[in-house]
Length: 69
Image (cartoon, rainbow, N blue to C red; front, top):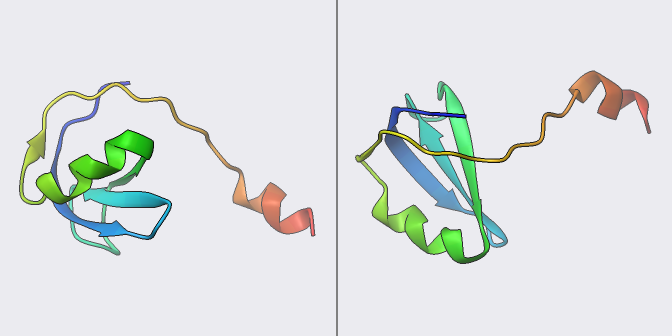
C-alpha cells in the first residue's frame, strides 16, 4: 500500500505511537501505528510529509467486535 500525507501530530501511548495523517485528530484521514523500533520515528515526523510508505495492516470490523462480547 502506498500512502502520501502530511503528519499533523503524533501521540505516544506507551506500547505504540499513533501518527495522524491528512489532518489533526479527530479529523485525520489515516492513523499510522508505529511499534517496536519504529516508535523512535514518531517524534521526528511532526509537520513532515510522508511521500511513500509500505505497510502491513489489519482491518477490524467494529460491528463484529461489538457483537463478540
